[in-house]
Amino acid sequence: MAGSGQKIIKVDQVALKVSDLSRSTAFYEEVIGLRVRKRDNRSVYLSADGVNDLLVLRQLENSVDPPPGATGLFHSALLLPDRADLADFWMHLQNHRQWLKGASDHSVSEAIYLEDPDGIGIEIYSDREAVQVEAMGTEGLDVEDLLQHATNVSWEGVPERTVMGHVHLKVSDLEESIEFYRDVIGLQLMMQQGESAAFMATGGYHHHMGLNTWESQGGSAPPEEATGIEYVLISVPDQDILELIINAAREVTRVEKSEEGDFIVRDPSGIALRFKVRAEV
Image (cartoon, rainbow, N blue to C red; front, side, top):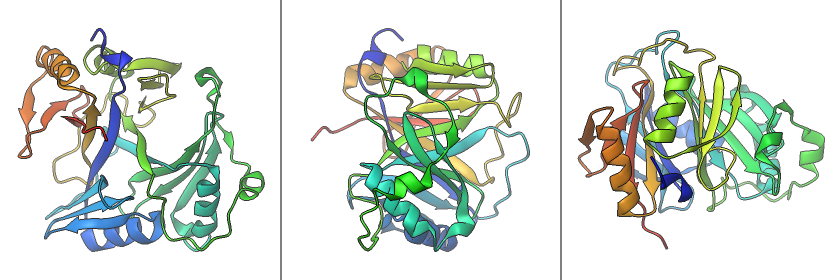
């Protein structure tokens, strides 16, 4: 879609379907450090600043695990304001190491990986400044060096300026997905790893959207009752950009509307994307 990639398209929120709402809420509060902003009988809304919901948890009535090879969420990724915050998070995790799945230095960022009680991936990361996207790779995290930046202040959850930095999706066909996110959504291909992974963004960021087929090549979307992703909420800067995206989407797929009035588009792997115009402060 010509032109839309020149304006910042942001991933604002991810909604997850979970098997045990109380258990998942405790994890995202106590381990991840988000704060409950609102709850009802089947949903919990989690925020860093008490205003903007970064994660929404939905209780499934009769949940099942997603089948092997299904498409869906590889991980959502919360971006911390700076490296000291990541160091403090690592210190906090020493009391919750059973949830830790890995830690990496990607040159453009440093990241800690966890899985929630349903096995849904979540990344906590901080960006490095002025590193070329082409340098992005994967090495082990230098924890000793990271901890030199720890504040040693009592940890009280993630900082209020924490945002949803990106999402990484398990897709069925990489090239088809790249074309969709480029031509329909307006993202730019920042880096591709062979035929199995790609990283896309706007505004020169290393990636707002990761795509891979490591576990999902040729896979199908899981059943509705499967735990995992419900939707990704994407915000755009103005109504013109929203209309460009929705018109482009209508040429390749069905467009629906949520109860809240957001447009819903499913990508080629069956993953639901919701769109809204963001209110700039």
